[in-house]
Length: 167
Length: 423
Ligand code: FES
Ligand code: FES
Image 1 (cartoon, rainbow over the protein chains, first blue to last red):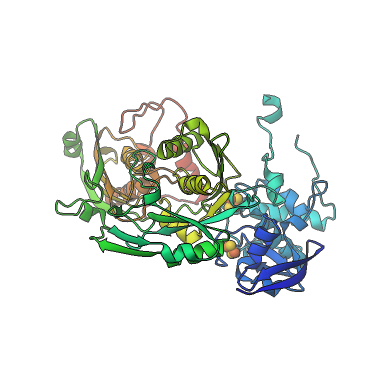
Image 2: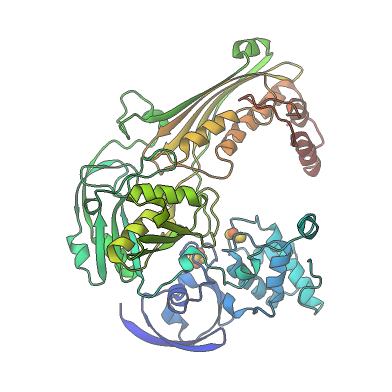
């Protein structure tokens, strides 16, 4: 278990950190950087709870060694939206009731964002395929699909953000 | 209040935290100077523990302490209904399933703790492994717990079952079996514990479905007054029944007391599958009678629920399952018996429906088979037997309001495009 120093950009911030050759990217993100929005559901590449975007690709951070991220550009859920201005995908998840226990939500949102970047007008089948690497045990998926449709509509009509407040 | 909320869409209070990745689940809590735990688990599903040797494991650099049953003679068993689950299995005692804990390893990192677990040596004397509840019920089966393998027997009687079968033109008799299911909440069992020496408080950040019950059980097991156990509910991360039972709680408390440092324990998914509760597999033997006009006259059920190595919610789950043996259908004459049986399988407890989903497989199958034999459309057959306001359940409860089963059947048939007929 030898130690070595790696550097990367995460959520727009440059980091240099000492890690080991057996540390997973997931552990580095959670235990060292305390970016706990990235979750561990299985540790086996099955559930997608640990999804992050690395060098433009969706990856399961439980299957990647920390050392593989040397020089990479990484986005975790903490890099999407902020308190003043949520991402349209985040807003759509809230509004459609796509969030229950919320454990799958960060990974789902990253998967949805990536899909909408590549395909701004997905049909239902394409949405299902786009989130097929992410398990949700609570919602039964329908509201997540609804959320992604809503976000796609808003993004394409270029007026992202909540159109109506419901209070 | 009503004007602001009733009839309006309200956003979930914590949804914003969740979509931003800010919500704190049990595994997301960190303290400075925190230690990590891993559990050495049973090496055989049914065996006496003869020897446990931690000497190599404690010497591993970074291991702070290893707790075995010898270190905690004062600690008592725990359990939701019956206190039959040991915190740690000691020398001369029995491991009853692969999830039983033999030692708590406390180390500076997760990796070191895992490595140390593998260095613990165990010698056991193997016993017959009972994985089939029917074997467990046989006279000559070895006893998993000293009071017998049938943990609970419940009976049900309504009307006159003999008369009911005498009135029937068609009788259908079948056996149904369901399997183990894991609830698989996406957040596995996890938590953090702290012991504050000065105040004598144990603080546990662990998700629970039953805070007050968990607090009481942890307290009685450790011999602490209840008010000294504080359980702080983080964001849960799904439960579906699986988080009704004690998991990491007592091990965290013991490690926190022993080290006076914050401690964290997170199961792996595999460990959660092996060690924590499941949905009960049922064997359901059913005999149902109906008239040629398609009205149910008699329903007899025998239910055998495999509760695995420990009771958990078992007696209540299997008992409740039996009460639902007729489903949402009127039957005047009902007789039932339910056995909750110990085996060496992973223990079974609560899961959504609490015994009723298993029964649905049996009663809806019976309804289809009967409809087919009678030559009646199965949707119609269900409708003409379904509960109304005023119906009485097998255990004699009169339904006084909110009985939506007929509407549900009609809606389901409509949405499914059911055209009637036989199938
Ligand atoms: S934790 Fe990585 S895919 Fe499940
Ligand atoms: S909201 Fe609970 S797993 Fe998806």
